Amino acid sequence: MRAFHEIMRRDVVTIYFIKYFGGDFSGSICAVEEIIMSAEAKVASHYGKGGLEQKIFTALKNAGINMDHPTVEDLAPVDEFHVGGLESTKELAAQMELQPGMRLLDVGSGIGGPARYFAAHHGCRVTGVDLTEEFIQVANSLTRLAKLEALADFQQASALQMPFDPATFDRASMIHVGMNIAKKDALFREVRRVLKPGALFAVFDLVRTAPGPLSYPLPWAATEETSFVSTANDYRDALQRAGFQPERERGRRDYAIEFTEQRNALLAQDGPPRLGLQLLIGEKAPLVAQNLLTMMKQGTLEPTEFISRAA
Image (tube, rainbow, N blue to C red; front, side, top):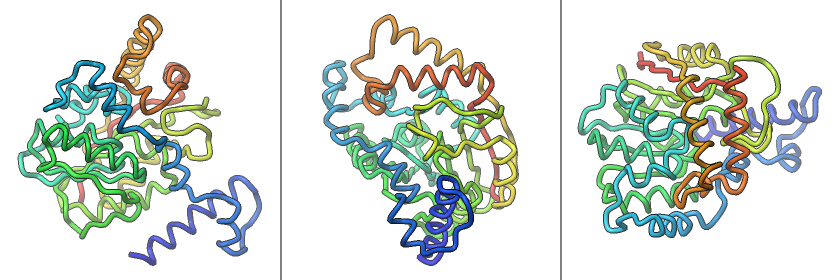
C-alpha cells in the first residue's frame, strides 16, 4: 500500500507540473515538490480554516439549539455542505437500499452531516474519511454531541489510500467530493477495493455539461488549481473500469437551481443565518453561491447522482 500511495503522489504532482509549467517532465520529483504543494495538501488547506468547532458551537447556542442532544435536523444547516442540503442526502439514501447494521463508508465526509443522517435514520454503522484534519475533529465532536458516536466515527485519510481491509463495507457514499480529485480511476478503484461484492456506491457530484472556464470561487475550490470537474461520461467510464456496474443516474439541475435561488433570496432578504454554511465558507459565501447558481443556469455544471453496484 505504501508503494501505491507513492505512485499516486508522484502522478498527481506530475499532473500539476505539466498543467502549470508546460512541457515534458523528467526531473526529480523532489525538485517539483519544492515548487508546488501536493494536490491533497492544497485541498485540505482550502477547507481547514481554524476555530471551526467553536464557531459552530457558538452558533448552535445562539440559534437556541438544545445542546444536550441536538438532532440531525438541528445540525443540517451547517453540516450538509452540498447542493440541496439534507434533502439531497435523503434522496440519495433512498436509492441505497440501506438496512440497520450495514457498514457504510462516507468518502470525503466533511464535518459529518450525511454520515450522521445515515446512522440516525437508517441504523447504519458509518465510517467517514476526509483529508481535512479539522473537519475530522469537528465531525467527531458533533457526533458525540448528537449521541451518535456508537454508530458513526471519522478518520483523517486520503480517498486514494484508505486504511481499511478489502471488502470491509456494505455501502459507500461520496457527496460533492470528486471535483477535488483529478484521478477518478484511482479513486473509484480504491472505493471498490474496500467494498464487498454486490455493494452499492452512491455518488452525488457536480459534473461539467458544457465547455468553458468556471467562475471561481466555488464551494470546493478558490481557483482552478484544486478543481477537477469531469463530465458524466468520465464518471461512468471510470466507475466501470474500477469494477462497478451502473444502475441509475439522475441529473438534478432544475432542483438544484430552485434550491439555490431560494437560499440566495433568503440571504439577500435576511442576511446570513446564525447557523449556516458561511461558517464553513467564510465571507465569500454569497459570491460562491452566486457563481455556482450562474453556471448551473448557464448549463455548464449539473449536480448528478450515480448509483453503481460493485461487481
